Structure formats: C-alpha cells, structure tokens
Length: 495
Ligand SMILES: Nc1ncnc2c1ncn2[C@@H]1O[C@H](COP(=O)(O)OP(=O)(O)OP(=O)(O)O)[C@@H](O)[C@H]1O
Image 1: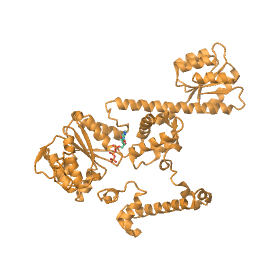
Image 2: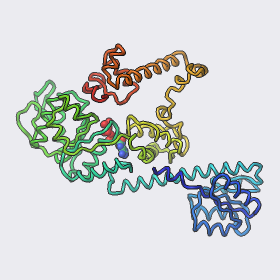
Image 3: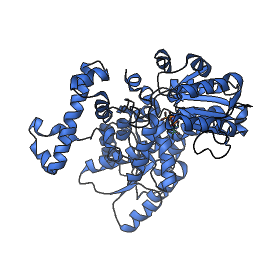
C-alpha cells in the first residue's frame, strides 16, 4: 500500500548550529528518538549537503557566522521547499520569528532550552507534517498517473482486481458486445458502463442510463421502448423511448434483475433482432444500441428460481465484468479517499489537503457495506467538518470510527453508569432498545444460518416485519416489494 511505503521511510533530520556542545547534544537527543541525524556546524557545508541529499526536517540556528540562519532558511526553501524547517534563536523577538515564518519556517524555538524534550516534540510535529505531505504527494502522483495513463477512465484504484477490471474494459470496449456488470451496490457499476461507452467507437453518440428497479412494469416498458397514443391510460400521444434516445450509442440498464417477465421478453427481442415494438404497436422499429446491464443480484440464482429468463441471461452475460467489494481491495482505500478529498475540497472551496494516518487506518479497517459510494459520502462529510489541513478520526462518521452508540455498549453492563447520565431518559431508552434489537436479530440470524424465513419464524414475527428490523442493521438485506420498490426477492440477496 502506498501509505505504508511513506510511513516506513526513516525521518532524516539536518541540524545546523555553530555551537559544538549544543550541536552534539541535539544530535544525541534526536538519534535517541530514532531519527537519522546529520549535524553540521557550518551553514556553507549545509547548503552543499542540501544539494546532494534529501532531508525531512531541518533544525537551524538563526545566528551563525558566514551565513545567517535566515539566509540558510532561504537556501533550504529554494533548494528543497518540502523540508520542514525549525529555527532556533537565542534572541526571540516577534520580528525574527515573523521573518522566519514568512520565509517558510514551520516553527521556531528559543535558546537556551530549559527542556530538550520540547525540541524533540517540535521535530516530531514537523516530521509528522512532512510525512503527511509526502503521502499526499505520492497519492496525488499515483492519481495523476492513473487518470492520464492508458486506463484514463476515472476509475481510481491500483489493486489487482481493479486492474483486471480496467484490462477487461480495454479489451471489450471496442466491440458492440453486450456486457453484464455485477457487484454489490456502490462498487462502481455505472462508472464501468460509462468507461466502456467512453472508450468505444460509440462515444460520439448518447449514453443513456436507466434504473430498471425504480419503475412499474408499464412505465418501465414505455420508458425503454416508447408507446403509441392510447396504449394505456394517460398515453395521449406517440412517444419514443430510451432505446430511440440511445440510438447509435449505449444504454445502461441498472438493476436488470428487477425487470418483470413481460419486459424481459421485449428486451430479449431487441437483443436478438436489433428491433423493438413500442408499447401498443405491432410495428417493429430497428435500433442500433449497445446494451450494458448491471445487477447486484445473483442472476443465475434468479434463473434457477424461474424469476429471470435463461435465454435473456445468456444474451446479457456475453461478457461479465465482476466488480469486487471495497473491503476486498483495501489497498485502494487511501487512493480513493484522496481522490474524493480533492474533488470535495475543490467543490466546497476548503483547504483540506490530506487524510491523517490514524484516519486512513480507520478507513482501511471498516467494512464499507455501501462500498465506494459510502466512502465518497464519508469523505464529503469529513471535508465539510474538517477544520485543518488533514482529515482526522473525529471528522469520520461514527460507523467508521466505531463510535456508534458507545454509551449503549458501555452502560450498566460494565458498571459505568455515568455514561447513561449524559443522555435524556428517552435517548437512553432508545439506545438500549436498539442495542437489544441489534443483538437479538444478529444472534437469530447466526443461529438460523442467515435464513431470514427461519429466523422470522423463531422470532414469532412475520417475515417482512422481521426483515424491516433486520435491514436497520444489515445493509446487504434486500427490501421486500412494497417496502422500497424492490422486486420482493429478498431471500436471494441474503442467502
Ligand atoms: N473505482 C472508482 N473510482 C472512482 N470513483 C468510483 C469508483 N467506484 C465507484 N466510484 C464512485 O462511487 C459512486 C458509486 O458508483 P456507481 O454509481 O457507479 O456504483 P453502482 O455499483 O452502479 O451502484 P448501484 O448498484 O447502487 O447503482 C459514484 O460516485 C462513482 O463515481
């Protein structure tokens, strides 16, 4: 992972002071703290070294013969602007401090040092800042490489599975073959469809997307194929459909597993014959549209259950591009986080530049049931909340930091009753109920091997009520039809 490479680099510190005793003491102190230190008593030698070697932090005395510390600071910033500089001054005046900061110093310390630990702490802070910016630069350049490289498709990621996706896009974009993109919600199925279109010879023609799960059968058919006047109540004139709108280009049919049987027949006809019939008409119309379909459902299972036509499945599944869940490619998380950070910092006009290592660690440790979409939302939120240059753990959503209802977890069970007292009675009761509900449904699901019907029976609840409760805690459970407009095939998604 890119971040690890940055973190493992030893921090290199340059100390320049013409007082030999202090120089040796600082060298010894910083070496003891684990830094790779070069101590020099001559600012001239220091400028020569800076031309040859990399440093992360420089600790410079402000008053030296040959070259003043401020002149040396300017030389450092000129040669290596990325080095974090701390000035040491025996005559701390507001003017010298200001002059140093204006010239790019990160901090300044006043000599003599009452407590050398202060020096170590200042160096540690400067080193941390330098590493953050190194990490940022590295991720930025990886992103630039990715965006301008052969993939150039807006798909961010360097993991093996995402490289394979990019390879498949390149391999199949040029043909007119139907592609089925599969993967959990938020894994980037539409992004892949857009990339396929953008890299195809059809790119000068429209790309039209439709979420098939969001419409009733009549509306869906009319949207896709158009209708003639009088085809159904409200059809007051002839209307073309999205296949007409996409002529010469690509149509992206999301949630293809949700389309009803009659629509499946019509779609099969378009795929087989290259022609469609508008709703209410017996006439055929020729169309030239590439179909890319997507689903988060297990289509072969729907076929087995008689809910999806086998012939249509084979027509759609000529090429399958499976998208991995985000938790299966954790190494992409830092890259994606910085990608979204850049996007939202720019959009929101904020000076957030990076993600702190502890926040990256939390992001990498979370399961991301909503995949890249959830990560994108988390980073947008963090950019809004962030007050400094780096997103920290407190800017992340509670689900990611594990702060979801901590009071509930810690309250009376371990005797820490004070946790309750920060809540109103209603809030405490609500949290306790949610805790009970979550543990109960999770335990039941475990006991019933994830079989929703069996768990509902054991709970003495009807299946759809049980599912409604379960859905509060499990994002991978499908809604029942009527719940949120799904097709009513919740069993498939959870089995
Ligand atoms: N690899 C990626 N690089 C950059 N952005 C991504 C990537 N994958 C997904 N995204 C972004 O995440 C969001 C969700 O992606 P998209 O809508 O393509 O997912 P989906 O799988 O089609 O979701 P659903 O199944 O819910 O329709 C979009 O804003 C998309 O641009």
